[in-house]
Length: 265
Image 1 (cartoon, helix red, strand yellow):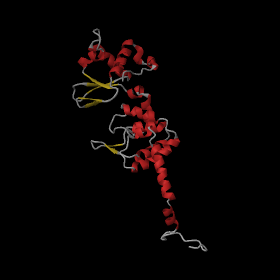
Image 2 (image 1 turned 60 degrees about the vertical axis):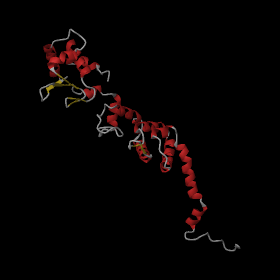
Image 3 (image 1 turned 180 degrees about the vertical axis):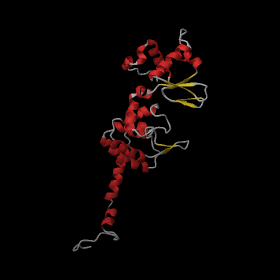
Image 4 (image 1 turned 120 degrees about the vertical axis):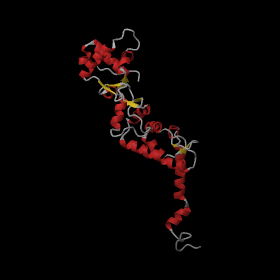
């Protein structure tokens, strides 16, 4: 992430009481992680960074020779700490310290990520994304929210049922896939309700055909259900209109329907 959010109300806080404090706090916001990372086996969360006190001036003021001394920076950080703007704790190994900006995700979180949390409040990741990824930091999560934010719960449920019915393809590496679920959902969202219903009607015929299936996204984007919809209708019509099946259904166990009385053979 190449930018941060800085709200106007910070001007009314104790952090802005001195220009040096406000400048230091802004530099801290620019230095903390915007997504979790690992450092020497320790997880550094979003809104944190690890540092050594002796190298902290170079870390916060990398492109200037007139940077404040370590003692000056320590004094200002302690002031920020007393205001509740930052938290500083030594690592149990004593090899480095951890600086944390409280509520960093609350103020720096992207709008699309907030929508994701509202859409899936009890889930660590959005359905369809890679399990174990960090919520709110994966690009696929943001794309997912953009795709689903205008769909109702019933429409999402209809897509899930369609997705499960869509045939699976086996890749040369042995992986079973239907393609990108996120991109398929994007195409599903773009379809009117009538076309969605037709796609659901045709997908079973496509699945039973035995053909190597396309990615679901391509199938929807190319309106391929139109080719298979006619096949499904013809198959249904054959089953319904076949005279033999009609006769067997009406006269079970007889070779032919009885002739009306009075009609000569």
